[in-house]
Length: 181
Image 1: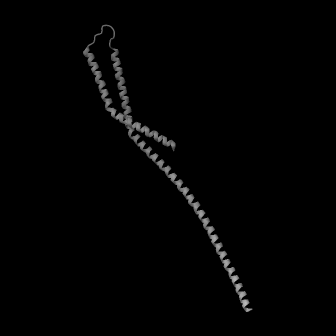
Image 2: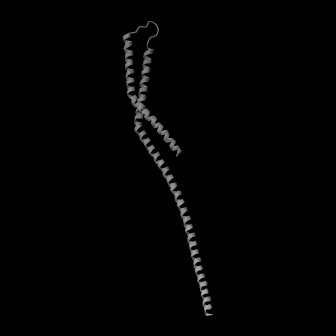
Image 3: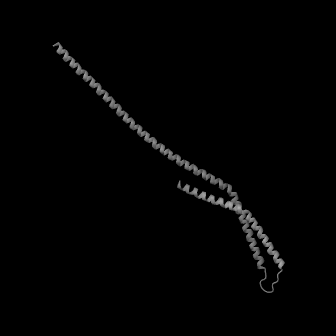
């Protein structure tokens, strides 16, 4: 009977130890499940933050691109303004010269019309051929001087015309870019 008591007691001890081990096992499973749930929650939060940062970085990249385009536009506008500022004196000078030549040509035309209106057209007309030759020769000399003066300004005028065309093209491009922004 003592053996049976020892055996019974040993079985009870084994059952008790088994229950303790089972409790420890359940506690570890609970701790592991809790840790895993915490890790999953942290992982989800980290993924949300990472996505949010990705969106912010993308927005910043778009903003940088936009600002670079604005800076480029401002640089081109400044360049255009510098070109215009450099060309304005030449354009003003050309305008003054054009006006002077226009008035000179107008005066020459008026003079020739006045002289030709004084020629008698009816009756017994006599003219000194040498005098007419001298007048026509003088008129041709004046015309040649005018032509030479105009021709001396033609290369500069062509250059300015080309620059103005380029400037107009750049200006229209800049205007369209400004309108797009």
